[in-house]
Length: 312
Image (cartoon, rainbow, N blue to C red; front, side):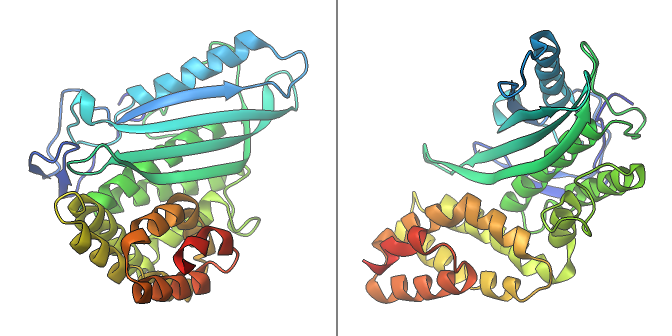
């Protein structure tokens, strides 16, 4: 098995980026390469004095090759249908000549139907990345085994991006990828790597994936489908209907807040979507704006500045 080549054994209804058709994947083996991600990768080592630029240039190339050339499922993606994303690694500290502490900023987005608008599906900063890397080292998964924390981190977020993208096109469509991310998390925890234990940090990767896979969070994930496919994708044809659908879907945020350990999930929603929600509600009537303001203020009490336009 090639690095990162993991086949999805479940059915999946997937609306392609240009929304020409709905494809049903039945877990058939796909022999042709069908890479799913189109990532821009940057490694910033400005904070490291006397940094080995050759090593970090090599790391940047290795990360880009791993993310962009790996095959994460059996879904067939044409080149122009790959999911656009950014991986920005900022190296904060050199521990040894080949080991470092860093933070990773991950962004992913998807187009909106019949529009030039691009909506964000992930906008997250992981502040707890530790890794070892030797110049010209290849990053890979060998027979589904991960022996490198950086590989585990990158594979985790690749699967999270795919999960969120699939959820936006089909109700609960990303389940396979969430489960795959959980498997990566389990391996990483067994290896004792940092950034994975839910006991150490409520923003850990374990906290993220356990929140998404909580049975009580299914209504939130279903809302992600409604938000994207039945709301944003409808707005070009019928802005009022799309906006109404969006506003009617958002109360699930309040019930999600009542579920244990969903703080990280709601914060990720706020970082990714709050400004977009406020903008989408700009043409709502005064009663709708007030209702939305009260709802969002109860869920995101520290985001009053972002919600201010709803009071106008």
